[in-house]
Amino acid sequence: MSDSAAQAAATASASTWQGLPAIALQLPGGDSALIALQGAQVLSWVAGGKQRLFLSPEAAHDGHTPIRGGIPVCFPQFNQRGPLVKHGFARTLAWSAQAQNAKQLADGGLELLLCLCDSEATRAVWPHAFEALLSVQLRPGALTVQLTVRNQGTQPLAFTAALHSYLHLPLAVEQMQLQGLDGLTFWDAVADTHPVQQGLLGFGPETDSVYPRPAQALQLQNTTGAPWLEIAQDALWSETVVWNPGPALCAQLADMQPQGYQQMLCVEAAAIDAPVVLAPGQHWQAAQYLRAAPGL
Ligand code: TA6
Image 1: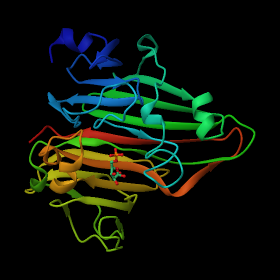
Image 2: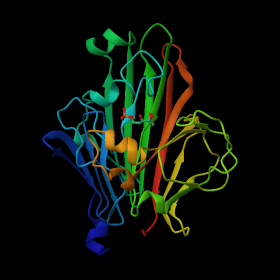
Image 3: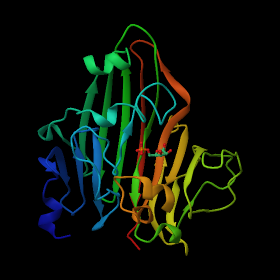
């Protein structure tokens, strides 16, 4: 980095993705992020000159259908664990944010806050007054995404949630592995069994597994151990979900290319096995932390 680049300020500016409103974050060293207002969904994160998030070229962009890729925010329901639409309504609604309100962080980073409050539409399906805030923090080589949920009503509310991060893989998924889950008993949702993870997690056919949050950060690496990304999450994200559709399910997903499953792995910070219950006025806050290794 040149001296002038090092002294330049990080910037946030209004942008678009496929015609949808978005906000672009740019650090002087070259790292960047793009966040769609729909769903407060981080769609792109470039660190060390390499794209670290997967975004399907076939992703919907009609402004209300879930966008396949990036970091969808699943709230107030994970998957089909309740009466709401799959993964909740937060990923289909427009959040509010202003690029000019992005905050320069003391360590050279940049923070964007996005907000979703209850509306007539949300109260019609989920009768609660709430405020959800997503903080997206871009730092050199690192991205932090933090969800805060506040109960603004007079009754307790309960929710499940996840940051459904689609990580871009530099090699085919069969050549990648996840380190850090060894010894954990997990729910294999494909086989509907509860085995114990033995060593590194590799990929082939569909993977859809719910692990208890590991104590240490996970490392996504290639099969010879060269690191690509480190993934950590706060303790209030009590589970980690690992998902790759594999070839058969991928072929059925209209918004994925047939081979798209090879380029992605979802490693999700989730609070799903026990719903989070908030008394009136209470809030809940937890982050997922992604750190880029130089590359493969
Ligand atoms: O988090 C894994 C999962 O719940 C899978 O079961 C799979 O359905 C995936 O999310 C994607 O869901 P979506 O509704 O975005 O197609």
